Image (cartoon, rainbow over all chains, first blue to last red; front, side):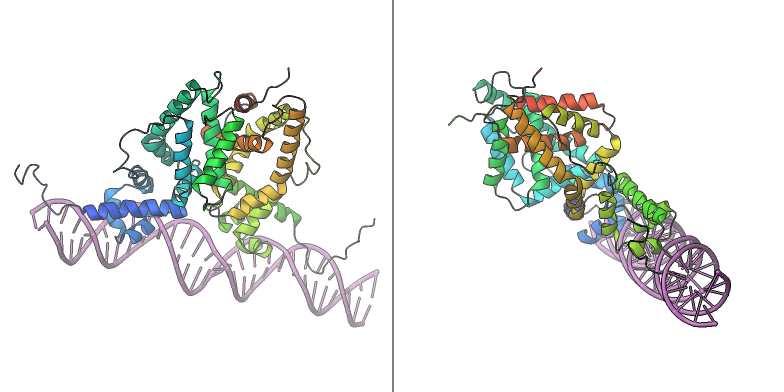
Length: 198
Length: 198
DNA sequence: TTCAAATACAGAGGTGTACTGTATTTTAAT
DNA sequence: ATTAAAATACAGTACACCTCTGTATTTGAA
């Protein structure tokens, strides 16, 4: 309980404010312009910092973008997602997909598979994996509850859901209400055997 | 039915060879590097032509890429696709998706929705629309034949199929056999009520 | 005094335009 | 018919401008 718990290294410490500004600028630009179109120069400019400052923290654009992606929701949402069934899961998806920024972000990540596969990988590892596991659980619970046929192929259902999200991202306008998204997802899952209990 | 139906304009006619070289180079670069990363300079260089020659034909990159997309399969495949049912339709999709170049092309188009929506639109108008109509027909025929439940939501099924294609493009390696692709699509459609007749 | 941050630099690549010289074709005059 | 003129296409070059890259050097805060 004293001041010098960890002996501070000599010299001027890095500004945490700059740290955050750089990551925020990188994330914004990733969403606005995409990975390939984002340059260190732009990130530095938006963060109110010079290029050298960015280069001191990150060896290159990819490392910077990866950390920017990992910084999303870093603060809150550390716990686990747990859906009791398909309905709640779709509610969450619909809510998420009704926020234009989220939609653009996902599109940018998917769009970067060819040129920057590390980005989608980083996203999957930091967010997607948890979500995918929770989806499996929710699907299994719904099946047990009789909302799906007993022989339902959960893997196929998950693929259908993933494809539906992608398709919706590409074909629907970004200004869409959560209700509309949910209606879309429900329609597809109904055709795939989902029978929600009233 | 003679040679000089349309009186040729004066001056040196444009080299058809150059026309083709420019479009081919543009298409190649679109697939290899993506729309945003493709420059007129690169197209000209690959076509063995100077920039001025490209600018004489096209006002800008977008117009060039659109025409390059429209030039695909311009020669053959002018007629209509007609599938007797889901099975044949999936055969064709699987064949198409087993060619790496086709996969990259579709990914590049989807990846460009935010920055160059005209490209996907051009693709839909020149190829996709026909295909989508044929899909509807194939699905309807299969339903009549009892391969789908009588109350099947054809629209939902088409969305599921579209989503499955997108998802496969993003999550599977490009070196995939037609058989594997078909197995994937069949698994998803089976979960969506498809029961192929033996 | 030590490291963070700003400044400066050299190089690469792209853009759109303009101008040269040459090749190819039509049109008009002889 | 032959020939000259006009029109157009293409390669090549240059321009002025911009953006980005990565590093080297200097300034200044802790």
